[in-house]
Amino acid sequence: MKRRLPPLLALRAFEAAGRHMSFSKAADELNVTQSAISRQIKLLEEFLRAPLFRRLTRQVELTPFGQNYLSAAVAALDGIERATVQSLQEAKALSVSVLPTLGALWLMQRLTSFMTEHSEIRLEVSSSLEPVNFKRDGIDVALRVGKVPGVEYSRNGSQITFRMTESWDDVAVMHLWDDFITPVCSRSFLAEHGPLDSPLDLAKMPLIHNMRRPDCWQAWFAAVGIDQCDGAGRLDVGHSFMAIVAAREGRGVACVPVIEVDNLDWRDELLQPFGPRLRSAGAYYLLCPKDKALSAEVKLFSSWLIGQYAATG
Image (cartoon, rainbow, N blue to C red; front, side, top):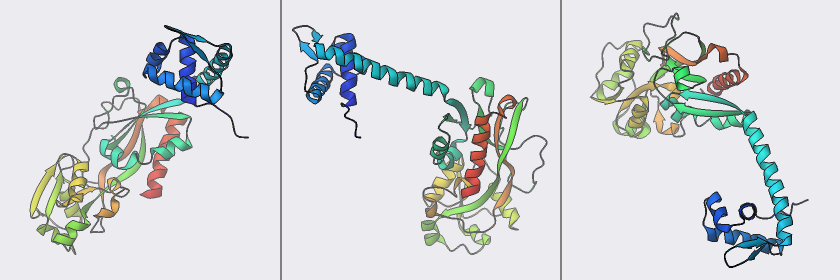
């Protein structure tokens, strides 16, 4: 059966005005104007077909019906407030630090599915390239890319030299994905400057370099058997997001991590003209304090991350 409920904004205005016995104080509490409170209460009175207040010269008084209705409104809103506070207290928070480019281009588009699947976990997401310090930063988990001490990596891949944490003491490490790089360019750029039938054709193209991953081009060329290729021009940018945007704008060919382009909303604007994807010397990891590694929230989040990339990567 359809509920016969009053306009909820009008009910809130009435409840506040009834508690304070003042339209102006109700306006201050709800951060609206006094005239807005007056309009909402008038709307509620029209809905109920009964007066709630007597408007006097400098004050208002509740009518007998208004007194009864206020008691019911206070009880109802108090119950909703208690349930809301309890729900927020019971929700388990997980503070996550992610890499800016990966977060903006890949992760943030997918977090809605995690929050839908695991509504009991409240995510608090921030972005940073800096080495994580869990105690100082108040972070539960950090998604970073780099090398883990004691793990052997290819000498021929692009060397990822980012520091992932200030200290490895008491830090648990979960491998998420390997990192692969490949050249990308826009369809419009290729239509104007192409074709790119062979990696040797890149010698005729302007090349976009990511200063935070300075050896990407050198490592990729070496992997396809080219000792040196400077291209027809060079554009240096500060990080991979800028390299991807520059490629989208048709300013040249960029060599970037595959994960950062494969699932973009505007992925169809970019081409990967060559097949070889070079595995980097480094990978993506989820870091957390050891005492949190077995918590349900961390295990759910790490499993979800791996599944998201496996499904779309």
